[in-house]
Image (tube, rainbow, N blue to C red; front, side, top):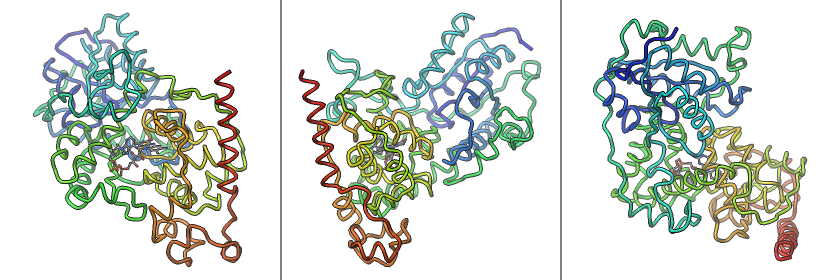
Length: 478
Ligand SMILES: Cc1cc2nc3c(=O)[nH]c(=O)nc-3n(C[C@H](O)[C@H](O)[C@H](O)COP(=O)(O)OP(=O)(O)OC[C@H]3O[C@@H](n4cnc5c(N)ncnc54)[C@H](O)[C@@H]3O)c2cc1C
């Protein structure tokens, strides 16, 4: 039932900013209206099948944690499900909200946000979009004569020199709308609401099959857990970050990516919190890469699926080779270890992501979109802008200055896993092969241990790839 609309009530819609600290949308809602209804909408327009990535469990942890933080301040979190824009407007009408506040996400969330703004404007309901997903909002920094920075180095210089917005403290209090306005939002324990929404398929819930969706669980989600992990990682590893970030077996990177993807941590707050600490500069540079890809996708939303730079490349779709890549059976130990890490943990080391992406697109000449899609289906930290544009960077269709860069998987393995410990951790067939020899076992050892021969010869595959490129270049010159 609709309540009369009043400017003293704001609807605060959480999206990829599931936190109370340094949350500009939340701060603006609390400062601008006497009463605020915090809302999260589970979008039923998205894919609702089984979720092998563990993202659903991470999201539910994060929502519970957010509800706890809001309750400590006198508020609570309302969770609904439905087509996202419709549901936001329905709740706004039920509570009589005079304005809507939310975090802008011009990369990944652009389509549904634009739909909401369009519908709300027809109802003369103002929607305020705030920063909060990146350190510097996409579109703030632009090169002269262009919409987006196309080269990371130039963007990094502008980004470092820019004045970043102030970091905001979480609000002391969140005052909910009065009882009459909240009639449609009974105060139930959030777990009951989530159980109803994400219940087993048989209960007729709108998120059918989500019992399966949340079955896999890796890192626990939430602002508290993200803050704790970042703090303890920084104490132990930040100073050595630049030296060990590429070391596959050390596994010494922060693993905060899912907390950033869900906004449990504020990239802006993390950046200024660590920048001046020993090792901080190299670490914060990685956050700049994240911003860089977000500003590219905001300017070129088509780059989710279209080549950012069309080089006329003709990819193949070799089903059997792609399956071997997905399942970690390529016969290249470091590639197989990485693909099995992804399947087992919903995570893969950054160096390994580059090696397997290069192997798929250059050794197998398979379309980057197939690889990007597989990553999105399994990564807990899946982020549309960062994933698609990293894939394009490796495939040579994106922002890399050197689009013909090749990663030799055996050489990369020996260099970044010199003792072979990473491979042995994920490829048990090779557990008895000592040291760097694990990166290229001889045919007899492979046969004896039941490990497959390489599905392609790297040198031959790259020669074929280069010939293909020459044809594409000749076509482009015609
Ligand atoms: C093909 C490919 C696909 C990728 N897909 C994703 C994805 O879907 N989601 C995702 O968050 N990251 C993605 N990355 C980037 C990177 O691999 C992960 O962010 C990183 O491995 C996460 O581990 P960490 O938090 O320990 O990283 P750290 O080394 O501790 O870095 C800190 C943070 O910096 C950011 N960052 C680090 N490396 C990169 C990078 N290359 N590009 C952009 N941001 C970076 C991340 O937010 C990361 O959490 C992808 C990289 C490649 C090559």
